[in-house]
Each structure stands twice: as structure tokens, then as C-alpha cells.
Length: 229
Length: 253
Image (cartoon, rainbow over all chains, first blue to last red; front, side, top):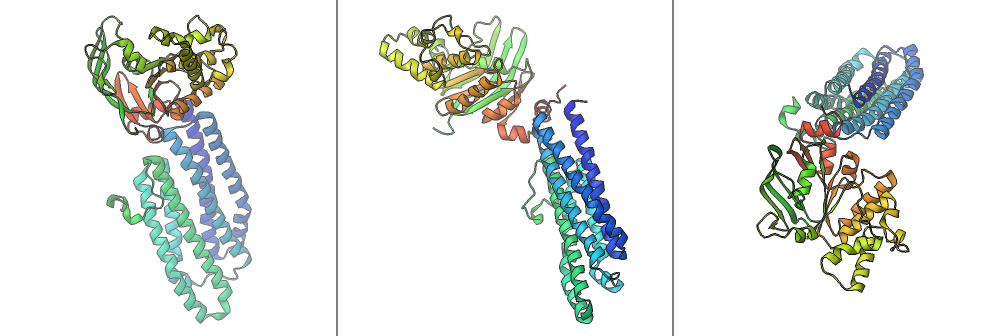
């Protein structure tokens, strides 16, 4: 194996570490808010430092690779994408932390099952986790078709987010004493929606790396038909 | 004169005896651009470069098919004078090869063999050429010194000045910086940026980063074939052909 390929393999493995770390944070933040588990929330908050540290590790390796190996063509697209994916993962980690902060400091009880059901929280969480899984597989397998499917899933997340506002408003009307807590829940929903956006960015970065195609700022509806499925 | 084709190769095949060195090469180069030829040793890029000013004419068993037009004229047509052609198409080689003469005489030589006798004219042209090659400031006080007293990088710029003296429209450069240190290399590259406003430059280089830095378009040759020819930006970000990508990323063979 050529040295360039060895370096790329090492970079991929460091990003995989970052990815696992962030995925765990996200998964736990969903569990913590669903089950009102404050211990778990504190664990997420203390783990956030490792996410930031790992972001720097990946960044430094990318910088070194660019400085020492002068990557071009697919290697250049790879390292540019990796830098952006790394940054997006770190932001997703931040969102998980802010959900954990709500659970640790402002949440007073588990979300009422009826409200969770109306908000489609479980479906929203599952969709984001699925996006995360698909984006990761798409990068590993250099599969841009799979990556563009992540964009379709983000539409689902956006719709759930949009529908949440009237549901929360109705709940506040019925339970005016829980207004502050419900606003916190709205913030959680908003963070999850932002996670979806960041995962879409990651999917676009994967497509740029694999196909050199620019998807950013292109309406999803303008994509060729087969890429929407 | 933007977007005007100045060099046009049409279905060029070339043989050294039985060896088929170039296979069906067609490409057009525009005036005032820098085109880089890249590819592994023996791929035909230097052979092709040398065809552009008929440097292969005297090679035993050399045979050409196809046409090469420079400024619209078939340079292999009957009646074309090779020394007239080389006035229009100058060449700079891998190793600096100044004449064993003074700095001044190196530049003046080309003018003298072309019959120029006017001393004042020769002097002004020597100065212009040395300025054009970004060497004037360093040598203006030692024009009577032997050219061999210059450093390697200066000698190479002297060779560029020598080529400029007869006012060509095209400059061919065969790995012009491969024998130079990074500082001299960067001077040559800076010079290429400046020269392309007046000249059309074709450069053969083994240094991928140099090709990326200096050229507008890049042609990748492999085993005598032109595999890919496109904008340099495209070649180095997203080449069409897997062979090009494997070569420029160092995954070849």
C-alpha cells in the first residue's frame, strides 16, 4: 500500500472514532430526554470535552496530510470533505450536549407520553439516528446514492419539526403551569432538527468527495429522480 | 486575441523506427495560455513537445503522420524553413545550456545569426530580453562576464532570455526547473506567469504541483496516447479518467 493510502486509512479511522463518539452522545441525549435520566445527561455533558478533543485530532491530521502529501483529485476532495464532516459532527455533538443540559438543569419530569406521541418524538429520533447511520455507511462505502438518500430523510425531520409548534401551543393552553418546561421541549425538537440539517451537510460532503458533485444550495427537488429514492 | 488557437495537432502519429511513440494525438492550444504536459517517463510528452519545433527531424528513422498547425500553418509542409519556424517557436531545455560566451553574446547570438547588424538595436534587444526573463537587475553590470559564472537558476533564465531575443510567439519548456533549487524554481514559475501575457507557453514537467501552479490546461500522456486534456483545475480536482487520477495521486502501477 502506498504511503498516501496508509495516511488516508489512518484519517478515516480517526474520523470513525469521532463519529462513534458523537453518535453515542446523540443516542444518549435522546434516551436521557425521553426517560428523564439526569445521570445520563451529566455523563453526556462530561463527555462533550472528548468530542471537542477528537475534533482537534482529526483537524490536525487533515492539516498534516495536506501540508505533507499535497493531495490532488480524489485525495484532495476526500480531505476537504473530511474537514467539513468533522466540523459538522462536532456541531451535532454540541446539540446533544444542549439537550443534555436541558435534562440536567431544567427538565422536571419525563415528557408526558401523550405529548411525546403527538410530537412524533420517537420517529424524529429514529430518523436522525438512521440518517447518521446511512451517512456513515455512505462515506465508508463511497456510495453517493446512499448519501443523497440522507437528504430525503431530512425532509421527514423538517416536517416533524414544523408540526411540533401547533402541538406544543395546544399543550401549553391545556397545561399553562408547564409553559417553561414545554418551551424547553420545543428547544429539544429544534436541536434535533438542526442535527438533521448538519447530517444533510455531511451527506453533501460525501457526494462531493465521491462524485465531485456540488449539492449544497441545490434544492433537493432538483436532484435527478433516481437520487431521491 | 483571446481564445484563439495557436497550436493545433491533428491526428498526430509518430514513430522512432518501429517504435510507435505517439498515437493519434489531437489537441488545440490557445494563444497566451500555459499548457502543461504530464505523464510518466517514456509516455511521449517530450517527443510531442519536440515535434512542435521540429526537433525530431534529424532523429534516425523518425516518421510523422498527421498535421501540426502553428498559427494556421502546417509546420511540416514542404518549403517550411526550420530556422524560421524556430524563431517563432523558442525552446528551453531541462539543463541550462548557455553558449560558452559572455552573457551579452548569449542573447545577441540569435539576432546576429538572423542577420541583425545594428549595434544599438542589439543592445536594446539584449536589455529587453534580460528584463523579460527577470534577469536584468542581476546581470546588468556584468554583461561581459562568461555566462558560466552565473548560478544554475540564472543560467536557466539566461536561456529563456536567449529564446525571447528573437521574439517568438511560442515558448516550449522541457522540464525547465527540474535541475533548480526551490528559490530558482519559484522565479521560473513567476516568470511563466508574466510571460504568458505575451507568449504561449507549453511546459513538460514531472512536478505535479508545478503543473498545477503554472498551467491553464493540462494534458496527460500515457504510453504514447493523450489520455486526458482539460482545464488544470478540473484535472487536479476531478479528472475524468481513472488513469489520470491514479497518476496524479501517485497510485500508478
